[in-house]
Amino acid sequence: MPATHQVFNQAAPLADVNLFEGNQPLRDALRFNAPDFDAASLTSLGALVGSATMQQHARLANVHTPELHTHDRFGHRVDEVEFHPSYHALMSASTGAGLHGTPWAEKVPPRSPAAQGALPPEGAAFSSWERPGDEKTSSPHVQRAAGFMLFTELEPSTLCPISMSYAVTPALRDNPAIYRDWAPKLTSRAYDPVLKRWSDKAGVTMGMGMTEKQGGSDVRANTTRAVHDGTDEWGERYRLTGHKWFMSAPMCDAFLVLAYVEGMGEGGLSCFFMPRVLPDGSRNTLHIQRLKDKLGNKANASSEVEFDDTMAWLVGEPGRGVPQILAMGTMTRLDCALGTSGLMRQALSIALHHTSQRQAFGKRLVEQSLMQNVLADLALESEAATALSMRLARAFDRQDSEAERLLARVLTPISKFWICKRGSLFAQEAMECLGGNGYVEEEGEGIPARIYREMPVNSIWEGAGNIMALDLLRALRKGDVAAALSQELAPARGQHAALDRMIDAMPTLIESRATEAAARQLARDVALTVQAALLAQTAPSAVFGAFCDSRLATRHDIFGTLPGGADCNAIIRRAMPA
Image 1 (cartoon, rainbow, N blue to C red):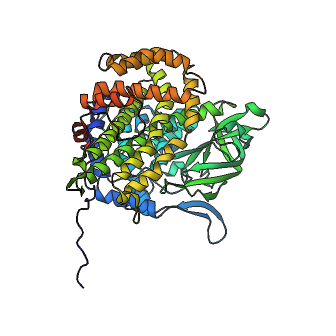
Image 2 (image 1 turned 135 degrees about the vertical axis):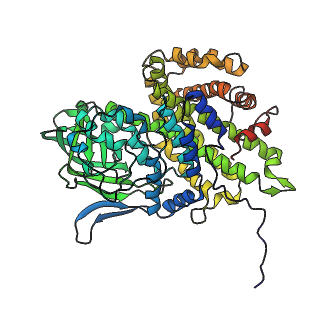
């Protein structure tokens, strides 16, 4: 049968490329924040996550979504979630890359005798990929942040349990016995998806459960109750009865959850460690009711659960549950900013790759002035997000400094608010660069559509926009934030008039807008000013100047509206993937 037509003028897939080597803004942000970063490990990771093989795993994990099995065929409760093998391949790669616990590895205490005697079980899943991070760096959170962003470009859904496992350490330390036993497993690069006793596993993952049906972000409205059940080697043991409306990654080995201690009244909201498998090897009574049918984040299982006399151990002091678990939430908010920055970079790379090949009206799309303005504007947004996210990660590496502690406290809600808010707009504009080809998914092969559906999750989870704005107000009461920001912005003085005006106005902005009504405006203005100051130190003049002209000198509303003096070609060349 004769062919009806020839297929031409379609872009080739962006596959088998090194996502690290082709990301100059990320490399420059690393040099600025961690001069001794381990380039070799990130180069290896960049090749892995840019490979066609791993892209296929990402597609399959999103097409073949998790399935819940509440009972076995004999009627016993099992409460297990079944994943496609590609999900496990992605999890093995991310744990092998150390994205879940490497920054804490040097701080792990000696194992308990039980843990020391435990050998990896036969058949345990280990990553065969060469382990990065063995070259020590003085900035492990920055190193890990870069890897997290690179992996997000491949597949973000599986990074939910990875992020929670990374974030749990600061909170878990307040139960020294549990931390001593579990920390070595949390920092292990082995991935073992089977539910079994922690001491029989080569590596573990952890999650958290805070929100309930009636409260959402208002966790003090929770109704789950905890009744004291005795004391053992892990401390004060309780039995929990209640539910959680959102508990992501229910196949994690343990969770931090919130519940009210019976008899303490409204001041009894406390933090508890809840394992899926108890120390004696039996299953804990954590019952998965159903899996959420979400807009995006399809490869990751998010569940509704009920606790029925479920065993858990107190972490921290009774009644201090919210600040205790927020020690974990702070780190996951960092990952929300990193994740959105990674998705921005992926969407931008696909748009640049497509427009460099696709022709219309006699020339390539990337050669047409309107498209150049859009692409350059997207490139500015992506690089600014990368710069701010990586700077925030550096603050967590320098917690011995009061100024850095203040910056971490204030930049965390600001970064999550602003970067994640920009994510959905960014993804829509990048998808438009591909036209109809960007809107379709075609059995999961349409990556821009997957990115667009993924973008809102980082803005909503771990505290939506208003929660971040309120958290910014709380952060402003923790110390001399204005002085810390002034010190941070000082190196950029004198390089652009609009930036100088914002730096000069910053103390007044902080004082006048530190109200609930103006908190979002304040978060936006501080984010843009810090981004501009960072670009002054890490980016070429074409990028820095165009960012200040379009975001500070005027108010940026839609992409593709850079002023006439912007050197769009130079900005695009810098952003172009390899």
